[in-house]
Length: 135
Image (cartoon, rainbow, N blue to C red):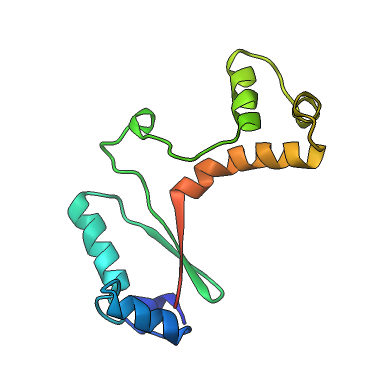
């Protein structure tokens, strides 16, 4: 399925059970209406145009922040673990902290410490991009 197919409302069912249940629960309104409803909702809400990207069997759409929203006003509701909070606290007071420091302080592997840091770096990217996968 291409972006052009998606724009004109072509629907391809990949999982009939999920589709049927979603339809019966009222979670799915019309076949092939997602693209136009997303565009209309964003336009009506004053959001900038989205970026649509084909990625194999999935479609990726990037939603941009509302022009009247300031980044510091947006709450971040992403839970972090105690190691990540400790890392952020250290950075905040100017201490240079590495994965080795986290591993030593918390008695975890360096692999775990590196994953904690990578997750922190990825939170911003995850908040900016939502992936849509066809059913």
